[in-house]
Structure formats: structure tokens, C-alpha cells
Image 1 (cartoon, rainbow, N blue to C red):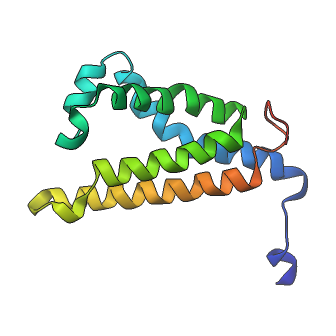
Image 2: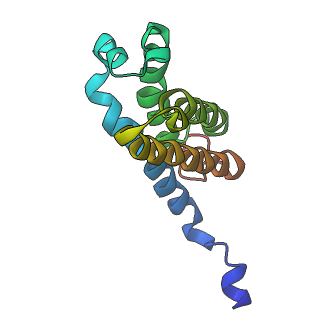
Amino acid sequence: MNTLRYFDFGASRSLLLLIARIAVVILFILLATPNCWALTVRCSTWPPPARRCRPAAIIAVIMEVPAAILIVLGFFTRPLAVIFIFYTTGTAVIGHHYWDMTGDAVLPNMINFWKNVSIAGAFLLLAITGPGAISLDRR
């Protein structure tokens, strides 16, 4: 049992870190790409506090497509992972404040809030471990 406890994945570590980087950001890339050029449409789907902020929509598109692609490529991985921690936590608080909601809106927003918290945790792990050898950073 101790062997498994201290197993570090050896030669597979870099490949597994690449797979982890892809898994963490695939959601951002898939869901943001269709809305990249429709910032006003994107703003209209946000809750009222964020709806007024066109700059917030621009930040969202930058974070969810180019920054996510840089994470996959393993370029500036650690600093981008830290920025993503703040981004996903901020998105959770601003966009999924289920504690202020009632009725049918509570459950889906609670799920999305905690999903964002979990994603922030994955970015924290990525910031600590780095991108691995299969990356542009090669660390």
C-alpha cells in the first residue's frame, strides 16, 4: 500500500500533466468559442450586476479562449493558473450567487458555483505543479 501512496507516475507524469491541462480548460474553450464575437449577446445573459460591464465580457473572452489555449500549450502556465483561480472564483461569486436566489434558480446556480470552486482548485494544483515537460515552458 505504501508503494501506491508514494507513486509519482514516473515517465508518465508529463503526459498526465498535459492531459490534466487539457481537461481543466476544455470547458472554457468549448463554451466560450461560439460567443467570442458576440460580446453584447454574452453580456445580456449575465446577471444584472455584471450585465452592465462590457469590459467584463472582453475579459471573459480573453480568459476563456486565448488564455485557456496558452494553458493547453503550457506557456506561462503558473501565472495564468493563478489568474484563472481569481477569474473562476470571481465568476462563481458574481455569476452564481445562489444564496441570493429563490425557486428553480437555486440548484443550478449552486452546482455551477461549486463547480467553479472545484475548477479553481484544479488551477491551484496546476500553479503548484507546473505544466510538465510536454509544454512550451518545459517545467
